[in-house]
Image (tube, rainbow, N blue to C red; front, side, top):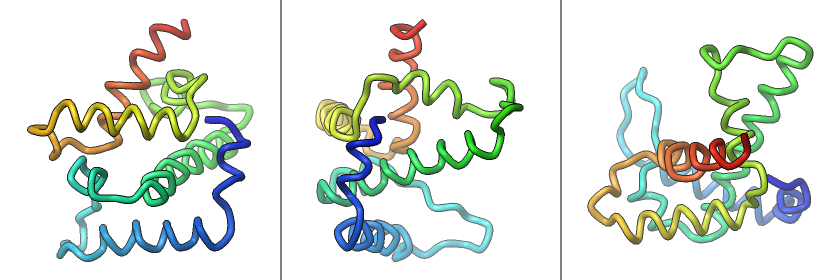
Length: 132
């Protein structure tokens, strides 16, 4: 993902979008050990800003992991982040968001599929093949 696209969503708009994203996930009853997973159901009901906030969160996660492991990156067996980053080369927030929207629209019976899984199998894995 390109830095220019990430910078556009700073300030109040990003905070609002993140708040709405967290609130929408937090409203479902959860057990203590349960980690909320965003599925196509939440994705397709979310506004463009909330969708972008989710993707910014994923981008931030990759940046934190890359910074943590600088000089000693984990193997592919220890982390999928290096492969995710490589598979998403050339993508922008909008291209990933639009790709997810197209996939869920074309597969309405698969709205239970987690968004991160869809990013991986429908965008990153094909990108890995292309970016070899």
